[in-house]
Length: 274
Image: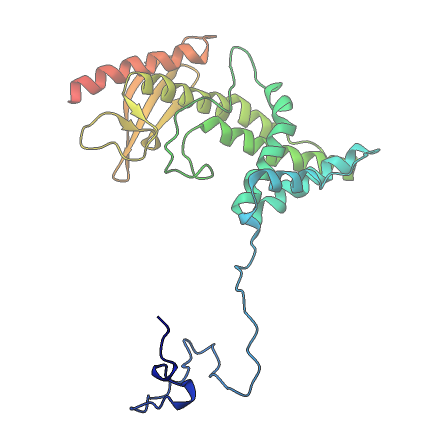
C-alpha cells in the first residue's frame, strides 16, 4: 500500500509555535580565561606543565650527572681531587637528591682509604644492615652512627688533599685524624653494634617512637661513653642524660665483645625497671 504524499509535511512549511530562548552566553571559567567573542579566532589550547625541578629526576640520572663532572681522561690526579672537593663543598648542598648522589660518589671514592685508617683490634662497617623505618628520611636517619664518622673523614680528607696540592708548605693536621680514629670511630662502631644486638633481643628500636612500654628504647635516645677502661650506655630523656649501664672494657678486646657486654647489662636493667 502506497502512502499518501499529501500526508507528509513539507519541511519548508514547519512553523515553530513557541519562540525558543537563545543559548546562554559563554562565561569565563577563571580570571585567566578570556570572555568569548564570536568575531575573534578561538584561543590556542594552553597546556600547563609543572616547572621542572632537579629533585624530580630519578636517582640514577642524578648519579650520572655527578659522575659526568669528572673528566674522561685525567692526566693529573690533582684535577680529580679538586672535583671531589667541589662535590663535597658545593654541589652536594644544592638539593636533597644531589646530596645523596654526591655522597654516594664520595663514599665510594674514600671508603678504601678510610678503612686503611682503622687500627686493630677495632673493626669497621659504615653501612651495617640495620632495619630502617620507611617513614624516616635517609638523610636525617639517626642510625648507622659510623656513617657520620666516614662523612667527617671525607670532609676533612678532601680539604687536606687539595691544600697539599696547592702548596708544599701545607702540613697535614694529624691530630684531626687521630681524634676520628682513636675515639669517634670506635665509639660510633660500638653504638651501631649495640643497636644491632639490642634489636635482635627487642631491647632497642630504630624507630623514634617506642610506644607505651619502657622497652624497646629508641636508638636516638641512646649513646655510648667510651674510655680506655670503661664502657657505658647513656639515656637521654626530657633534656636530661644519665648513665643507665656501665661495664669494664678489657685491654685489646674487640668492639663486638664490648657491645655484647653492654647489651647484656641493658637487658638486666630493662627487667629491673619494668
